[in-house]
Length: 125
Image (cartoon, rainbow, N blue to C red; front, top):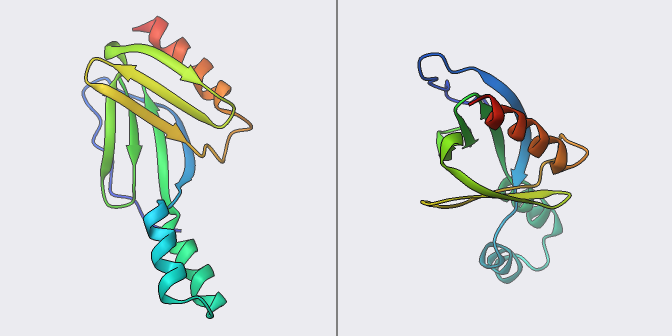
């Protein structure tokens, strides 16, 4: 398990829910693996394992964060959320600044639980 950098919370902010997941590799990453090591299956599997980067989805009382071990990758303030679209294993949160995609929610049975918690936090704000 990789260590994550400490999360800096704002004054009065609390963590509500944290979910571990993995970000899948892009098509170009997979193409490079196939081109450079087509016969070495072990190298392919090890490379794929490294390409699926660990990520944490963190819901606080004020924002939704996507955090990799090195830093916070993306975040969105809860008060800026305009629309939420949820599928079983993915969620898109839309704001005026753009979308925030949460996918591969591996620790939840489905993304709908994360959405329900997010809606409860939105009502409190």
